[in-house]
Image 1 (cartoon, one colour):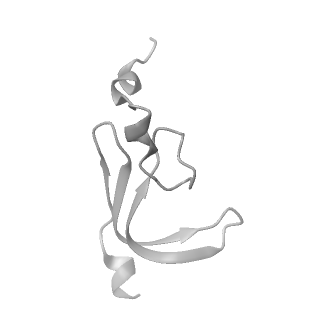
Image 2 (cartoon, one colour):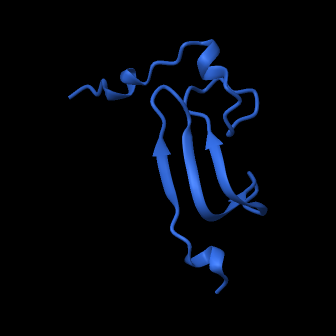
Length: 74
């Protein structure tokens, strides 16, 4: 096992922004193949990025408001 496999992965939700994924992980493409090894990526939460699944900053332009994420119907 290499160091990357032992490293803890941390996912942080940025207020009105992307998910920040940090640690040792491998990205897989849509076909399940290893794409790239990264140590930090920003993943889109607003759904409007032109580079999905990655954040391209569009959340700022569209004034993404993550408080809607908390509106769960019971």
